[in-house]
Image 1 (cartoon, rainbow, N blue to C red):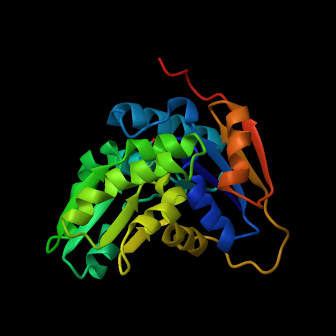
Image 2: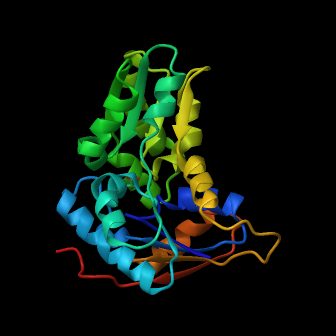
Length: 262
Ligand code: DGL
C-alpha cells in the first residue's frame, strides 16, 4: 500500500516519521513544496491550486491514500480534495479539542500559520470544541523559516521560541498546540522554554493512527521504501534529511510540478 504525503516544505516529515514509526512496512512517497513555501502567508486560492497539483502528481505515481501533512493545506483544501478524489484523504488540524480537554488554567495557546488561523474550518473547530476556554492564537512564520533552514536549536531558535511563547505564558496558557507540521521539529526547544506542568500537543501521532486504521492488517514484512521529493533545491533537502529524519533510509529526488512561483 503506497501512502502519498504532501506539505509546503519539509514540515510534513514530522508526520511521515510518526507514520513510519507505527507502519514500518508501508511505502511512503512525500512531496515537499519548498519552491512555494511558505503556504501560511498565501491566499486560499493559491494553496488550493498547489495542493491539487501535488495531489494529482502523487496519484499518478500510485498513492492509494493521501495524507495532507500540512494544517494550512488541510484547512484550505481538504473538503475540495475529498469531493474530487476517489481515495481516502487524511488531513491535519490543530489539536484544539485535546487542548481544551487538558487545560487546567482555562487558557490554551494555538501556534499555527496565518492561513490556518484565518480558515473557516479553524473557527468551526474552536466553536465546536473550545467554547468554554480562552483560545489565544499566534502565527509563527519564523518557525517555518528556521526548520526549512535546518535550524532546530541554537540562539536564533531560542529567540523565536521565546517571542512566540512569552505572550501566551503571560496570558496564563498551560496547553500549547503545535498547529503546523513544521513546529514539532522545534518541540524540544519549545518544551525547554515552558514551565513544569505545561503540555504540548502535536497531532502527528494521532494522524498516524488514523492512517494505520485505513490499512489492511498486515503481518511482518519488508521495510517499506521512503521516497522524499522536493519542488525546491535537492541539495538543500539532502542537507536537511539527516537532521529531520535521522537513521531512516530515505531516497530523495527533485520534482517539478506546475509552474514556478511567479
Ligand atoms: N507545515 C505547514 C502547516 O502545517 C505550513 C507551513 C507554511 O508553509 O507556512 O501549516
